[in-house]
Image 1: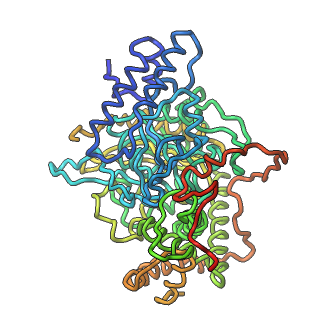
Image 2: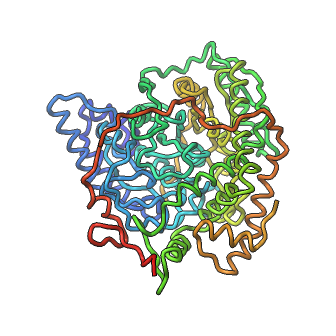
Image 3: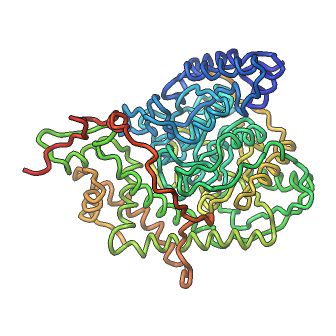
Length: 494
Length: 95
């Protein structure tokens, strides 16, 4: 039998159901894994008591013969963007140091109600702004993966959900929450060989999730495989009157609906995603993915998404614009840190607090956002970007006339070394070239680990679906997963 | 459109972020790089295109006009850097 720490959500569920082990044993196993993995710097706050209390509740419920929740006995990692009652929450920023939420985010609360426990709060790019986890104020997360060249270069786990990616790939937690604004679930999932799912905008409540770009932010699961993502997303999502953009729709039973037979499905291959300088290995994997989906019964069609190249620049106007507005709340008055120079007045206190509290990438984006929203530039930048966003969304609508799903690579490269791209913001932004368009259109998408490159590092394939059609995305993901047979894991060196 | 140092200082001031002279100097090329890159959007013909307002069609709901919480003053103030007499405390605003 597999060791407990090697199990994901469904494995833990069946082990507890059959009495192979208790939820308490599961919690203890992962608590020990967390405390032995400090060198990865993936966990900002360890919460063993939370995990143990949830496990005890599961064991008690099982002994009493009660029906267990979807996540019963599963201890998870929580991205530090989710406010957790009584547990320090920083979004990876100094400006929130010392902030202890007095309330629970809807997503974490839903997961806890479904029986999950929490192992700890996970490191991330500061305010979710980054693609390598290098913008955290609390240090880089180090990927559990290493290149097969015998060297020990520290690699980026991707970002912004870098801590989530690292703990799931290192089997330090069986699953973790992520959030995705322009690719922050899918790109890190691809970098570390796990499965990540971004649902349709509005499926998961944003209430209590620290805001970055509100029209784009969506929470989602990061887990071992497609089934685990389906189970976890069922537990996370659902209508929430406290979020004005929450979708008032029932949560489908995605797990029960899983089916890898794709007969009758048409898969679009967007020709604009063949970008310059794509590594041949990624090109080959994409081709392999096409063959796998054909084998699953799908029909392949070429489609065009003509405004694809404008997605990233539109994103880097819209997201900073929303961020500059959302992050105005960090003023040193109501929560977080305050920097009050001697004799300073209120305005100087704001400026000093934000100067010392925000990291360089966050400041850069706030200033870009402030500029594009400022008088005289609003229409040229912001309104134009929102119009381009409409065109990008219409591109997808047009594609859906001839296909049901899209298949693309998740990221334009495998994981890179820490420090290799951090000096050049634009080069870093290009990491999200394949994930940003679907974010701008609010569409559901999955990243499935599909192979290794020549350096022995994971590569992912992305499936994008129509709004609200998570089921088809899960199913195509499952078809890829079954055929890819991806079992590679990082060797434990930490 | 490109920004100069004075504009950078103005943006920083609007953003309520203190910048030193050296930081402002460094930000000029950084911001211009990014702004130069997003500039390409101007080549897209957007006549007769409405700006996006909601990615997924969704109506803003009305809720009943009732009090749903309250009496949580201490919780509201729990994370304040400085709280006094049941209020947030800030440096003197009026001389």
